Image 1: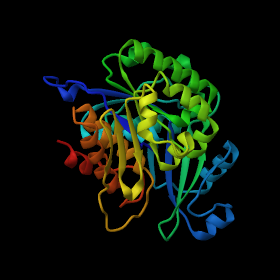
Image 2: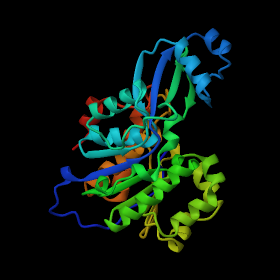
Image 3: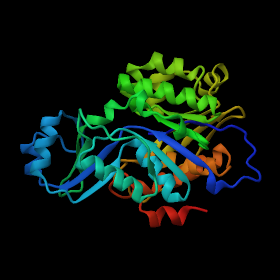
Image 4: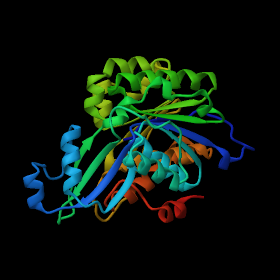
Length: 339
C-alpha cells in the first residue's frame, strides 16, 4: 500500500522517541480466515486468488457457511498502525465499526496490540466491514470483502483531542471513495495543519488513483507532506513524469515509490535514490507487503532516521511478511527487529 515518501529535515536531537505518536485513518475491516475446499470455492462462485467486493447479503451468507479459524482487525492503515505498535511506538487508529459482534472483535484485537481505537461505534446503519479469507488446500487465499460501516466514517467522528501530541497523521487513500469519509479527511487535515502535524497520504490502489486523479493532485498541492504509492499507482497519477521534477513543483516534501523486488525509490529535496529490497528464498503471499513497509518506514522516521534508512528498514519488514500467509507479523518477530 505505501510506496514513496518525503522526510522533513527535523532535528530530533534530545527528544524521547518512545513518546513519538502517529494517528492513522482508514477502513476498519475485520479479517476472517477460514479453510475451505476447492469444491467450496466453485460452489460459491469464488475466483481462486482474487478479491471480490460483495454486498451484505452475500457476505452474511458466506459467514454462515464457514468455520472461522482466525480473526484479525484489518484494513491497510490499521495493519500499519498495529505494526508500529508492535515495534514499540505509540499508534492510534480512527475508523468506523458498528456496535455489533464483529465491531467489538475489531476493537478488541486492535487494543491487544496496544493500538488505541479512537472513534465511537455506530448504533445504526451498516454492520461492521469484513473480509472473509478462504484458504484452499494449496494455500491460495481468495477474498470476499464487504465494506459496510467502514464507508460511513464522517467528519463528526473526528475530534480535535485525537490529535493532541500527535507527530504524524497517516491517511488511507481508500477512504476517498466515500463522500462522508472525504469530509472526515478534510477535517483531519485542517486540525493537523493547525497543530503542525506532518501528513502522510497513501495512494492505496491504481484504479482509485485513476478515478480520483484530479482530486489527489489538488490535495498534493497544499496539504500533503509525504506521499506513498507503488509503481502502478504513480503511473496513474503522473504518467511518465519524472518524480523529482514533480516534487519540485508541489509542496510534497518526500515521495516513496515501492517497486516490489526492485526496492523503493525515495525522492526528496536532495534528489532520488533507489533503496534495494531484501532478497527472500520464496514468496508465499504479498498481502500486506505495502502495509508492513509503511510500518517499518514510519517507525524509523519517528525515531529520527533519514528517509533512506527508514525506507531500507521498511523493505526489511516487508521482506518478512511476504514469506508467510496473512497481512500481520507476530509481536515476537517485530519486537526482535526494533531497536
